Image 1 (cartoon, one colour):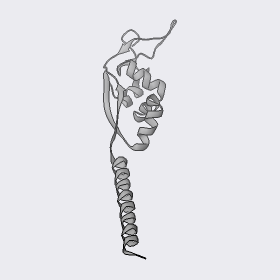
Image 2: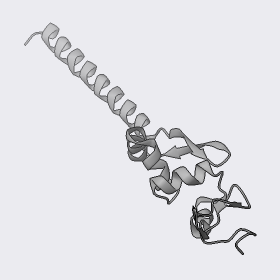
Image 3: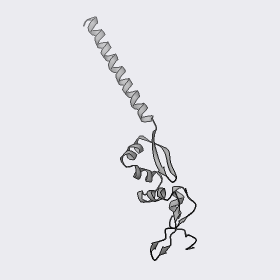
Amino acid sequence: MTDTNTADITATIDNAFERLSRSLLDALAARDKPHRRTAKVPGGEMIITLTAEEATAWDADPDAAAAKRFGLNTAEFDAWVALDGGRRCGASTDAGPCSNLIGPLFMSAADWKACHHNARCPKHA
């Protein structure tokens, strides 16, 4: 083996090692990078930070992932956002369920879920 061949082999190995190291560092940086998404909430939107796995699920179905994040199913999540976190009266009327809103607005998802349709408006108290 000549000195030229040895130098070429050494350069090839060094080059491969450098590319592998750079690739590994890039993969680690991407893994640790926070994944931020915008979530609909009562009154507007908020930025949330997700893991890479949560971000993948979010990108596939944002409403289902947001609902899960807030401890609601998709229908509950849509109602919570549409009602700005306000709860509806739970009374039954001849025309169907009462649709009166009961304050306060902007309740957390857990509080909203616990009392939505479980309280009564002044008309049905």
